[in-house]
Image (cartoon, rainbow, N blue to C red; front, side, top):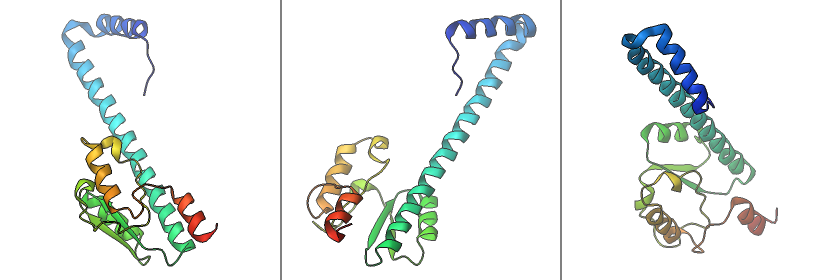
Length: 154
């Protein structure tokens, strides 16, 4: 969030020690640290929410462009499942709440799989990838654009 070098932090710390005194400095530093941490968490949450909204909007646009396409969305967080269902209402997109490591779909039940911003957050990304590949028709993950170009000639 802030880009401060060690020297700058040392100057700030020295000035704070002189102004606040050794008794109050630890409490003030702890409070400032808490505020900065809360601000960072808030900014990260807003970024995450914006990214999810953009992804849902992209999927909605894709379904409007190709009305016959069917999709299944997977999410583990209950609030995000509710948001996805609300956003995709009326578009025939099925949203399921379950972990990506235990999809339980039959072999080759999907033509293509899109996985965005998932694997880097999982403790065992290879287990999730194996489960996704198990469900994919061609046993590989392809981009949406590649699939649509091949299938619909666009």
